[in-house]
Image 1 (cartoon, rainbow, N blue to C red):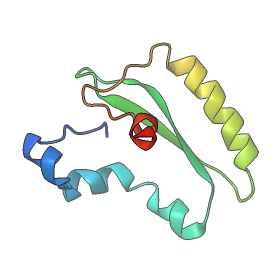
Image 2: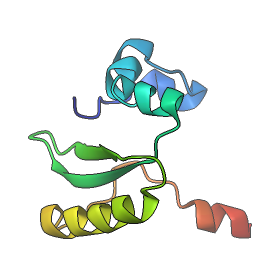
Image 3: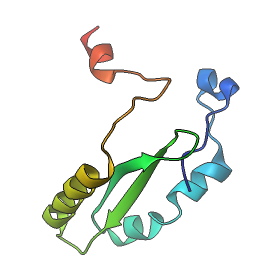
Length: 96
């Protein structure tokens, strides 16, 4: 499942699309309940230009292995990073 487009009326209110949101997190729930370490990395874009992420869930106490794997996978798969059309620079917002 790739990222779904945010409806224009949801931008102002922060409305959540529960159906699409549930589809995005359906495989991460088991890891959360079991307390397993996980990491998600960007690996590319779909035909519409929306980002695609890949999540790795590891064994207990395998954070270092997951970080090494995530770093390598991102370096291999993501040769070009693109900011989304609507982008908020949180570091800039904190400085105000």
